[in-house]
Length: 166
Image 1 (tube, rainbow, N blue to C red):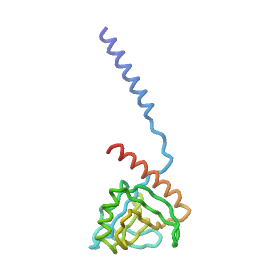
Image 2: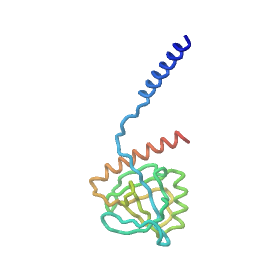
Image 3: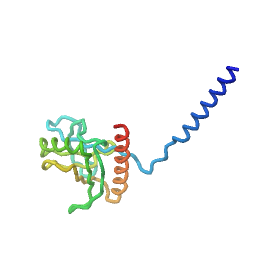
Image 4: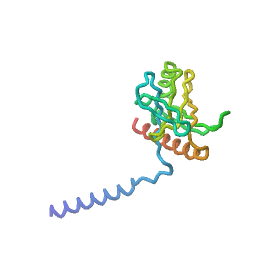
């Protein structure tokens, strides 16, 4: 009797477990997740040498990023006088940290790496108070909308996950 009860209990547990697995199946993503990070140009010349893909500009950067994917709140494609570029908007906590860093490291360059590929650089020409970074990337203009969409959706998903855990 006890064996039959235990077997029935075990079977019910397995069925409930399988039913739970089916209900929590994740939907396929409608974007390609991308890791976007900014690295600061090394003041000493020591660090990680990077080369931009089209211009062949070489920049040696510190090995630790100053902005990571968790610091990015939004990405937009914008048209400025010199052409199309990415507008990367930082989260409120990242704005404060980046402001302090931009004050002390004026003149150095920031290199944007996406999925471990250096794609753009910009010089810190003054304190950045609003957390908005404009970066020209060395990719064809035709590929920029898809890049921005992937970065935007990756950022939104990551921010939702961080808020859920926080």
